[in-house]
Image 1 (spheres, rainbow, N blue to C red):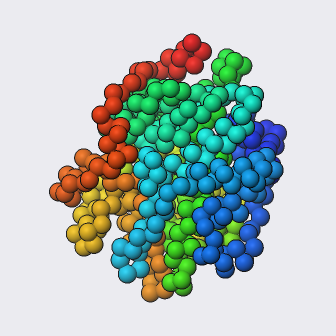
Image 2: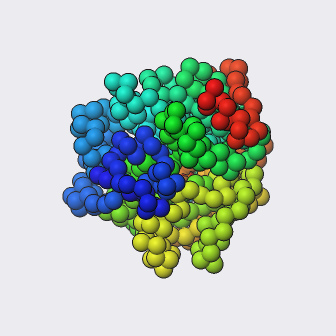
Length: 429
Ligand SMILES: *Cc1c(COP(=O)(O)O)cnc(C)c1O
C-alpha cells in the first residue's frame, strides 16, 4: 500500500514511512492510494468472527507487507483487549461505548496501535522518533498511556492550560519516563499550530525525526474504522438501516467510519455531531470552508476550529459536494442543549452520557429516524472524565473506576510554554 500527500507535491511512501513521518513534507495529510472493498462474505459472516480477526482483515491492506501477519495479529490482539459494546438506550437507538480502554476514551485504540507499530519499526533501534502531539483533552492521555515505555520513542504532549478536565490533565502529566507534558498558554488550535510548524522547521527536523500522534497520523486514524465494524456485528441481526452519529472535533473518527463504508460496511447515513465549533456544519450550508478560532465548551475534546481530517472526508467523496451531502450530515449544539440531552437521557433511561455522547445523541434526534432505522451514537468517553459537568448536570454521583483512581492521586508534572520559540528550545535542548 502506498500513501500520497493530499497536497500532491510529496513523493508516495509506504505505511511505515507514513507512520514515522506523520505529516508529508508538503504539509499534506497522507492518504491511501487505493481502498479495496472487503468481500461481501466478510460482512455476511461477520458475527462469527472475533474482533481481532475482523480488525486484521480490515487493516491489512493499509499496512501492506510492512508488518508480517503474525506480528500484526499480535499487535491487534494487544490493542483490542477490551470490549466495545453497543448498549440499547431507546427502541431504535443504541450507544457504542468506546471507553473501556485504559484511559477511558476512544483514542486508546488508535494510540495503542500507533505505539505498537512504531515499536515494531524501531525494534532494532533504527528509527528513533519523537512523537509530538497536541491535545484538546483525551489524545494526550491515550498517547501517554499507549507509548509509555516504548523503546526509542520520546513523547512530547502540548495541551492548552486550564482547558482540559482535571482527570484528563492528570492522565497526561503524571506518567514520567519517556513522556513530557508541555502546558501551553493558549487554546487547542495554538497547540496544533505549534506542532504543525515544528514539523516544517528544518532547524528541528535536521536533528530529530518528529512524528505526530494526532489523527493526522495514519496509524492513529485508520484503526478507528474497527469501531464501526464491531458495532455492525452486534446490531446486524436487527435487520435495520444503520445511521451512525459521531461526536466530532478533528473529524478523524467519522472519517474512519466512512473508510469502513468504503470497505463495504452497510451504513445508511453518517451524522457528524459537533458543539458550537461548527466549521463543517457551516460548510454544508454554504459550501464555504471558513475555519474559526475554537471556542471552549463542556465537550472540550471537540473544541476544534479547523478540523484537520475534513479534507480526507472530502477526498473520500472525490471532492464532490453533492455526493458528500447524500451520505453525510453535520449538526451543531450548544452547551445548554447538551446538558438538556444528558438530563433527558438520564431521566428517561437511567443512562449516564458524557457531554460528547450527549452531542452524538442530539445528532441522531436531529437527523430523525424512521421505523426501519437504527441509530448508533458513539460514546467517545466515560462520563467520569467530565466528572464536574456530569455530576452537576445530573445531580448524581459517578463512580470512579480503578484506572482513573490510580492517576488522580499522582502529582502533575508539566513545563509551561507560551510561544513556539519555547517549544523549539525544549526540543533542541
Ligand atoms: C477526540 C474526541 C472526540 C473527537 O474525535 P475526532 O476524531 O477528533 O473527531 C470526541 N469525543 C471525545 C471524548 C474525544 O476524546
